[in-house]
Amino acid sequence: VIELGLALWWFTIVLLAVMLHATAERRARLARTSWRRDLIPPHRLWGGELDRPPSTWPWARLLSAAARAVRSRGLPTEPSRGLRRLGRVGSVVSIAMALALVPFAGTWGGRPDGRALVVLDPDNGLLALVLLILLSDVAQVSIGLSDQSVWSRLGAVRIAGRALASIGLLVLVLGALVLETGSLRLHDLVLAQRGSFAPAAWLGSLFHWQGSSLFEVVRLPNWLALTQPLTAILFVPTLVLLLRRPLAFDPASALVGAAGFGLDDDPTDRWVAQLEQRLAAVLAASLFVVLFLGAGALPYVDSTRIAGALEPFVGEFVPGVLLIAIESGVFLAKLGLVFAVASKLRDASARLRDDQWLRLATRRLAPIAWANLLLVAALRQLSATWGELI
Amino acid sequence: MLADSLAGLLGNVSLGSSVGVSTGGWVFVALIAACFALPGCLVALARRLLPPDRRASIPLEPLAFGASPRVRRSPRHAVGLHRSLMTSVFVLALGLVLICFAAAIRSLGVTGTALATLFAGPTLIVALHARRRSLDS
Image: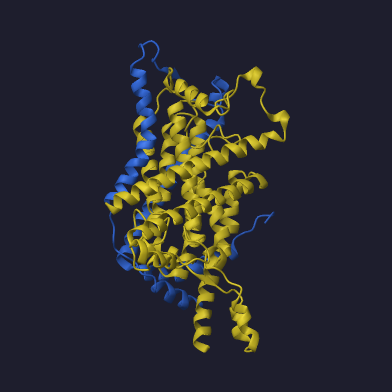
């Protein structure tokens, strides 16, 4: 029953996150054209587009989408239907399984030995995550290859190139996190980010004088984004390469669509493509929140204390549920923040061609990731030696 | 010394052995899959209620870089075919490497990764250092 409840609760959070992503993306898209009025298509002449039907009323858009879906559909001739269906199923299952690995909150009741609040909790979660992300990319490649369209095949080549260039980078980036926490389990990474640390405490231990305790006053949350900022920075382009899939009709990317989805303008295909794209974006943002922003934990607040203060009055169950609600809300707020920052970053940065992306990943980011891995190992060894000396 | 430290650190990583998906996991995957499939099923149901001439599919020619004989003789067509062939070869090779990797990790444990890193790391650094640089890098 607990497993089913967790699955339903996490499914609700994922749906809310998908809606959040859709809203943020629509707002960013409409805001992007508002400062260049000459770029807005003349609706009187064109009668609107698929993305922007003439009405802004949501129910009218829903009805028009339903009408488009039911009308006679165009089917490209000679598609490899079996491979395409297999690719779709593989893509959906791998993205869903990867989402199920995400530990959105801490433990039941905030206790260190409580049940982990995650749908799937394998001990080798990080390895499973890498394999599932790779499987989703392979599934997208197979979808692109199943179509006869040249554009789809070029989209498949794009995704294959990106996956080949960045999967090793992902392993190197995650290796630094594994060295820090000593575990391949995702939930252990979340637990390792509880509490806070004093970034200047080593200065106090260096100079033994009376005011050295002042260095302990400034404390930061123990998030890996703050303890390993370079790893966090490297993680962002890696996930962009692996999980961002601009479609043919994406006005922001202005690139040829990836892997055949939506190229024949079939509304059902379009629905599957957009939902897969949004779920991949939610997975990427969730992974950043879990691995670098402490999942649903409130900074500077010990959830064990909240539960402990309430337990004498209302028992054990109510504080546990309350903590899940609070941490889920905090998780969603952090997701929204990541979406907003990612949108601003996308607006502020240039669009790279695929060869530029691959060059950046293989010639710049991969050596930096190697150096980061060795740096983390050296720092851990140094801090252990330093602790023994003190 | 640093390499020894890295090996020691990796040796401390606990490698679990639990594999398998719980009921909650399957329920979650099924719910996500239902989100994908539900609109398509509803549309198919609605289309079955329409008269046959209204729901007939329209066959489309696949998109291409043009359909003229001149374009069909274009070298880009061969390039596209070659790229798709190379993609499938690379993806297949990658899959084979990953299967071997998973099997090796399972039998040797994470310390095997440490030893492999000790072997591959210096080789990679020497190869990167000695590679022939292009003019603009």
